[in-house]
Figure 1: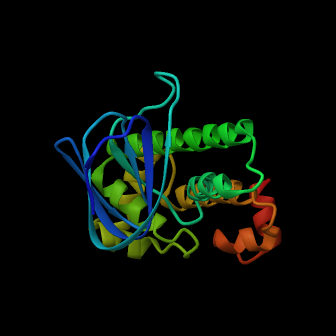
Figure 2: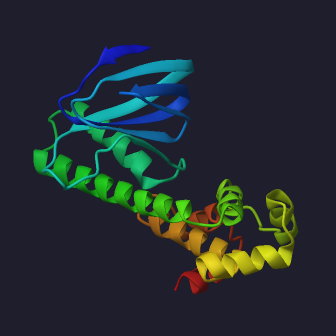
Length: 218
């Protein structure tokens, strides 16, 4: 546990294993592996570990209005670049000779831009019909898994036709099309990794046929 304390800078805390709860003023934020805590500067916070827990965290300062530092949590997939970049920012502090501050700042800017994208995605889901929100949450637990509309309808407690109509109304497309777009969004991020081959990216996004994936992505 981390007793009551304050930071002079905004803090990002990523849980990489276990589960913990962070009380920020009177707000209780809780999450397990993949949970990213955004913690504002200058406020009281108290961290309680609910099981053996490992975290990666950084503190930073940026101009007023450049980043929403309000207390909140975001959920990151293990392959989300924000996860990788946050850990790199920590690891690179140990490099000898240390990396230049320009490199560190640029990586931080990219990380904060990605967090803004996640904030926008979360905000749009809050305005969605709860059935669609539940369906998307189930879908994104494993985007590489083939989508069965009957299973998705069963999980959300509606008929296949009603689920399809809700998706068209809320997302402008069918559930299958939505999954395809999310898979390609993931592929876009994975393709930034110079160590991954195209067939590996295709498989990670649920496409066995590499040529079909390339045509679809194009």
